[in-house]
Figure (tube, rainbow, N blue to C red):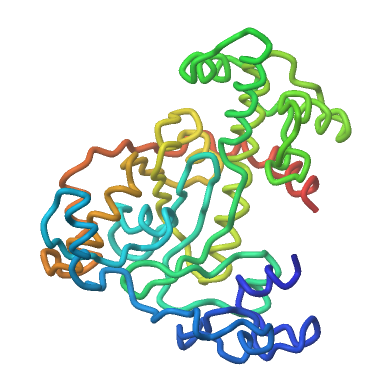
Amino acid sequence: PDLFHYWMTGIKVNEYTDASTSQMIDPGSRTWARDLIRTFGIPEKILGTLVQPGTVLGPLRPSVAHQAGVGSIPVIAPATHDTAAAIAAVPAVGDSWAYISSGTWSLMGIETKTPRTDEKTLAVNFTNEGGVGGTIRLLKNIMGLWLVQECRRDWERGGVTYDYAALMKMAEASIPFASIVNPDDASFVLPESMPFAIAEYCKDTGQPIPEEPGDVVRCALESLALRYRWVLQRLEELVGKKLDTIHIVGGGCQNTLLCQLTADACDRQVVAGPVEATAIGNVLVQAIGLGLLGSLAEGRAVVRRSFEVSIYEPQHHERWDEPYRRFLAMIG
């Protein structure tokens, strides 16, 4: 785990291994880290040529084209990761924004031109991941709506099925900030029962135990919003400026309650949408590769013209200060 942690952040780890660098790809040159590869005895012949998303690799092989019933269409290197594609479809302008790719996991970060491999980045356990157009996605992995999904699955196993709209309505009617959890706590990774795991966490931390489904869901969503606030503050510290807007893309942007809670907790405008950002981003990368679009910024302008988004303005931000102090004490 330590090596993987350092590999993702790009910090040198001579004290942990004999390797001179700690990532398969050098974050500065963005080429293979040959020294590390040789140290681990990985055969270099298995490593392909690194290309940027949008690179036209050539025509589809005739045998594959025949089997698929298509012509000689070009094969274009995609963003290679669903989150990278989703962030390419963020309908943002400028550089004063953060994103949340929201679904079972939440991936929250910013887009930068260069990787951050300093001690501050390591201390908060943020990762540098390649993006579209030569960008770097500096981000934090957060548990996400897995908490709610697993609660719903547990209740369904018990014979009661709730749709998400009903759960959100019950959560809206529940008492705010009755209990909060650290959504990234290891006890929530794969519990036998998510409602029980949340109840045990609250019990162990001396908080009221949420009993009703609405109380459990509200606890999960408010805790996620508090985690987003923590990540946003760390991002702003790393880049030395305020990030004015949070763009939420992916399936989770349909959760109107979580979007509003995020705006309130972070005291930032939230722009939610598009939902199918990964598919849209992949189309944009192909269009850029074929020269139909001139740049990532031009592609994002197309997204803004093509898809409706929902805007959430922060409300009663001051009410989140006391719960946030509790949250900070909880996560240490």
